[in-house]
Amino acid sequence: MEIIRNLVEGRLRTTLAIGGVVAGVLALTLTSALAEHFDAQVAGGVAYYRSSIQVADSAGNYAGVISLSKVDPIQKLPGVAAALPTITLLAKPGTTAITPLGLPDTIVYADPRERALSPLKTRLAAGHPLDPNHQGEVVLGADLANEFRVRVGDSLDLPVRPPNPNPDFVNHTFHVVGILQRTRTLPDAMASVGLLDAQALLQESLPASFRDRVDPSSLASVITVYGKRGTDLDRLADQITAKVAGVSATRPSDYVRGFDQGAALDAVAVVAGGLTVLFAGLVLVDTMLIAVAERSREIALKMLLGARAWQVAAEHVLEALLLGLLGGLIGFALGVGLSNLLDLAGRSIGMDIFSVSDHVAKITLGLTVALGLAGGIVPALRAARMDAGLALRAR
Image (cartoon, rainbow, N blue to C red; front, side, top):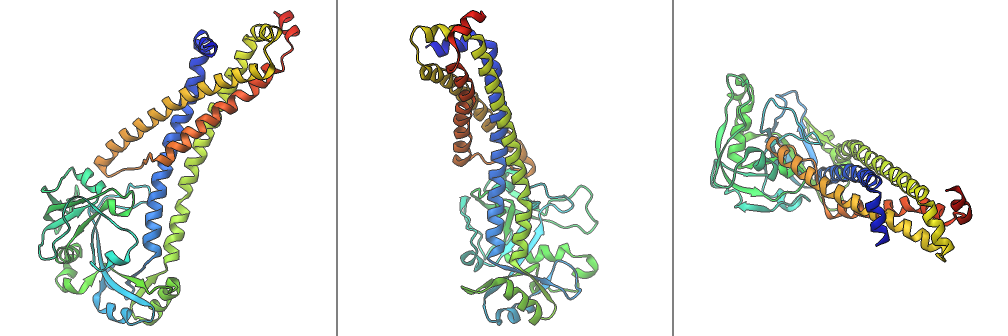
């Protein structure tokens, strides 16, 4: 009860201390949620690109397409488990990527056999999978469904018409048959369509002078290659480039290295959060030191009446811990609310950058307890070591 009385009597000091902790924990929650979301996206990207080889055309043909005649020569190479055509197109041509990994909204066709080979597994939150016998169907990632504000049963024109389209721009109306559960990684920004639809869209994305001279059933954007168990994919990529004419295979390690370099954003977020917590700790220590100075006569009387040093120290540590907990809980609640609010607003434009998981909650609230304890130790030691006689004479 005495601790509560002290907090109430020093309302201004209490407010300043709690306010400093709130600011620090709020910033820590936001930066931790940003780092958590970024880590999930990086993990998904690394898992996908580490497990496969992306093979593109290098023969000087129109960029962005590769002939399916390259599939058989690749498939016959030792170590290749599967060489599968993949078609990818921008869902919003003419716009720049705004996700933390720089990944744009994408229209995708992936060979059904890839589902068993890829480490990225998806589940439907609503609707049903694509029917290979039907055209004009699309399954949307969670972010795209939010961005386009559509549900199962709605219609959607893809690709999205840009503000100033080319005269030969073409898009088609698709029926939304499924929406995926949120993965916090690559599939969230994908619109999956069937093979015939993807081939038609790929052909229509080519320059008019080129599109009429190609058979869309003979093209893909890339060929995705999966290796047999135990195969060195980097070495296999080099063999594909060397032995199959007119193609260039990217080493999985090159993709992974790109993701690792992007992790600098994660480090910046962690450092920023740590600095705010340090600031909050300094505010708490300063507040408690002022409290000890103001209560020096009271502390001296307690010690003269028999209070032991550890009891005086414990009282101030508990007071600092209570201040830290109050500020931490308020700051964490504000951080969760603000991150959810920002995500809700951001999803309307395809931007989802926060993830407040149990891991974030444990780290943030654990640091809050540590902050309260750390903030009370120095003032508590000063109070416990106070000379009661000197303190009384000084007043």
